[in-house]
Image (cartoon, rainbow, N blue to C red; front, side, top):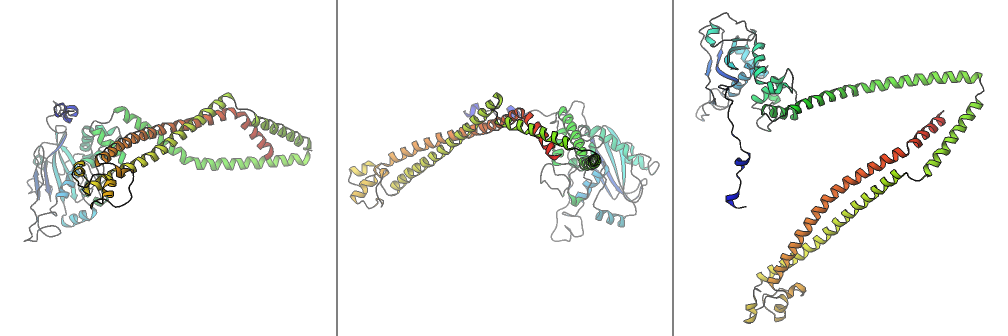
Length: 476
């Protein structure tokens, strides 16, 4: 295919990505965040952040070797500036249980008698003022309002249920995941939206790390991958239903299997009780009754059945069994033949590869020894054949006994090597086809064996039943 005929990847698989026409803002986005040491009007924030629509970058001054500011030192520079804590507070304000590790939380509570994270958050085009206490016992709140100042100027603490606000987030932002985790979709989606820094990027589905002590709903790697597919619109609705049905069936099976040991034990106890009762009853009957005639009749019935079983085992196969046995034997022979062919062709391939290597080795030695062209021989120089060069005593002639290759020119040696390489390619291709055939024949041989087993089971069903009756007679 020429360059002008090549198809560009994006021309074939690319697609235009555009927001929905009625989507003029995100379903969930922060507009403002304040950290307050007191819940009161006109209080000066400890920190205040205004968010722009789109990408917001949290930046800290780089470390300065000339100062004490930096990682594990006092100051606001480098690593230890609170960027991770800032992100954890945002996660906390949209429903996550913890905003930090226990150690950091204890440090905050020692420093502040009261500390609030207050945010203005938009959820599906509705503004909420949300507050969560980072220190102090005051309960969380969330109230529909367009301004933090408006809420702080009113009744404090505000009378608004934080769970109502989280329910709105779940309703509008976690719909694709609800089908996978009914009533718990937002808890399973939030770890992906706000993954732990400690998790780094070890894999696309690792979102939480135990070092962060963050809320982490228990889910498998496969479940987290399905969550991503659901949010990205890559999960068919019927797959969700099928997976739910499978999960319910698996749970039912596990519950029933958990009951099985107790049921088996109860059944064994009942059997032992019944056997004890029957033995006692029979013993009481035997004490008063002559059972010799009954025993003799049972012995006779056992012998009749044993004789019937012996005759059945010497009978010829049924047509179904005979056909199944022939098919199974044919499948085994075909598989063995294919494997033998592969081994034969591999042996042949190894021999040809050695011949090709020898031809190339002779050609390389001739080139290095100066035996290059026929013109050199016609001018009295050493020729390009090993045996002639050796006979003439040429100074660059290779030492060693002459063989069939030594009577060939370099061109002939290289031609032989190319022809041998063509054979190598052809035999390798043939071996690949035979290996593919072996896989198909192995499946056929397994299926033929299963068919033979089924045919034997059907043909011997009555024999097996009578044999079990004989076993019961013997046991009695």
